[in-house]
Each structure stands twice: as structure tokens, then as C-alpha cells.
Length: 294
Ligand code: ADP
Image (cartoon, rainbow, N blue to C red; front, side):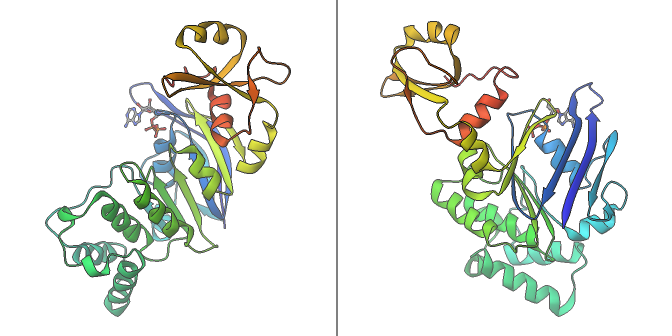
């Protein structure tokens, strides 16, 4: 199974060009979508999920014309939106049963899938509790259960770990990575290193444009020997910015840890470090947007 996006563009009625001629082919497995706020990630995900129209371009899931055959796509799709709201006064089992009916799953099959999914996301013992009493992590696990109803072949999750603590985040990712091999999972996140751990492929979009499509390990490899770091005082930062390509600046024990990109010899005092995917990300978007990390 393959998702093929070609020349996709979208301008909202307020004039914002959210997608600008995006072409991208996504294969089975976990695919990470990175980009700063306002890059167009949600617009892209909503368009693939048949929830909004594009102005131009095409999306095919194998032979299926996603922008035209919406009903068929919805049967194959599991979607966990960024602002997944729950009805607080209904319990997980009832809600999941209701969503299953909407997806056209009925009878004994419905009862079985609802039970199995509640087990899978580890909410079976809490299935009779109202969703309003669930923690953030439980709500997200419920969200993934509803997205998995009907064995979707295309799963889209938009910033699913926002608001989760690290343990909940790990549990959530374990769940996602257990999803079958013959499924496409598109994951948008702000946690760049999670993409390296989880995804076989990733893309960076910025200001509606696709800047990069690559494998995380290969992208990191490319920066080998080109990333340097130095701990400096705040007052030094201006001079460094004038001379070096600063990738990120982080506060560390009261001083600033500056990471730079340099493919020859950097200023004195900078030491080489192993690159990480975040370097790839910041290097790629620098110049496009102001990267203010401090
Ligand atoms: P991301 O998910 O990467 O943060 P979005 O796709 O939500 O980006 O937004 C891309 C751009 O489109 C932003 O400038 C945003 O303000 C704008 N935008 C998103 N949705 C709408 C909408 N319904 N109407 C008008 N502008 C929108």
C-alpha cells in the first residue's frame, strides 16, 4: 500500500497558503511529519483524511482517488485529530460502540472489536468509567482505540503526545508501533527525536512547502562532522551569530549551549559532537523561519 500526494495546494479564504505544491510518496510503516507551528501539517492531514478540500493536486491510496472517493477512503482510515474531544458523561465502552456503528461495524463483530480494542489499549478495566474522569494519557489511548476501529490501512495521528507525561508517551508509542506492517501510519509531532526512534521515513514541511523527505538515520549521517557545540555567555551570542550558522541555543546550567553547523573550521572553542535529528530539522528550517530557541 502506498499513499501518493502530487502537487497538492491549498489557500484558505483568508489568503493563507497552507500547502504549496506538495508532492510526497508515503510507504507502509511509520512516517514522521515535522514542521514548525503553522507549517501546514494539520492542513495536509485533514486533506488526506477527506475532511477538507484541496485547491489543486491529487492524492492516491494505491488506486483509490482520495479526494474523490471519500466514502471508500473513510472505511480504510483511522484518524486521531489534534484536538480530539471526548463526551465526558459517557463511558469508553459505550462511546467506542457508538463510533463503531458510525463506521458501519455492527452485530457480534462490533462487540468483539470494541472489547479487543479496549484490551489492546489497556482500558478494559476502566471501560465503564466516564470519559470525563480519564487522565490525558487514558484519553489519548481511547483516541487511538477509536482510530483503530475497523482495521484501518491508513492511520493519521496529529500531535498525539501533546500533554502526555514521558511514561504515557512511551506507552502510546509502543501501541502505535504494534500496528500491523501493512499499514501506513502518519504521525505529526514536535518531538523531533521521537521521529528518529519510531519512523522509517520522515518529511519536514515549512510554510506550506515540502523541504525534505528522507530516512532519519541517513539524514543524521549527512551531518556527521559538521555539528559543533560550545558553552558561552549570553554576551557572546551576537558575535557567534555573525560568524557561524547557529542551529540551536539552549540554556544549560545558567550558560548557553550553542550548536552550530560548519563544514570547514569553526570559531575557536567549538567542539565536534554527534549530530541528532533535531540538528537536521533546525538546519533545514533555518533561514525559512526565525529559530528562536531562547
Ligand atoms: P500546522 O498543523 O503545521 O501547525 P496548519 O495546517 O494548522 O499548520 O496551518 C497552516 C496555516 O494555515 C497557518 O498559517 C494557519 O493559521 C492557517 N490555517 C489553518 N486552518 C485554517 C482555516 N481553517 N482558515 C484559515 N487559515 C487556516
